[in-house]
Length: 224
Image (cartoon, rainbow, N blue to C red; front, top):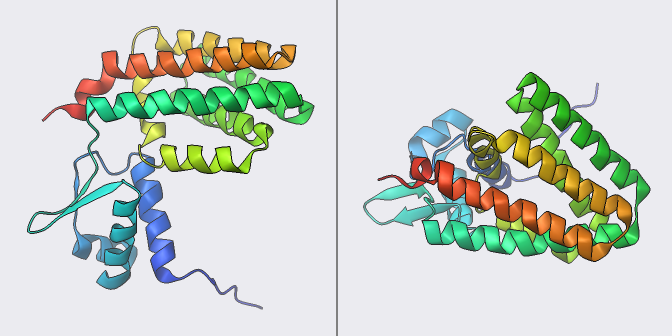
């Protein structure tokens, strides 16, 4: 039997693993990351962990301070505002491009994700909602078919544990129902084939998400 040998370096693997853990919110904003603890946890030496943390610092995910150590970046309210402002523009552009291209396979996948969101709301299943939400946004970006846009948005989202933000935001009273309606509005605009309408619907959704973050959950992330 052949054994699959990974061609990816240990450092790259460790970097990707820690990156995903931060993005998914497994490590809290402001949480201290110990090189020795991480090396033990991942079963590697401290060298790849140290290099991984340096790379993640360049990406804005961690902060390394002399004599203090490494901590997960804790965004300020200003940084959150900036992130959501840029996200609003980029995702609005993606929705407009897909509406213009009318990729029916992608639009059908987006419609199914909205159906799954409806089921999640009915059953109060937050895991299903977050998963469906991710598929919704990822598929719109794929449907835009613009590699530069994809690169920029991925770089942006890697600077915040976005899935964790979604979980926290839908805990705000009535946000789950409001969010569902916003997704339905985006879907309707995509199906209409009107790029401007789709762009505006997506921008309105992202803006509303950002406002809910600040109103309902920013205190949890920014306290201290």
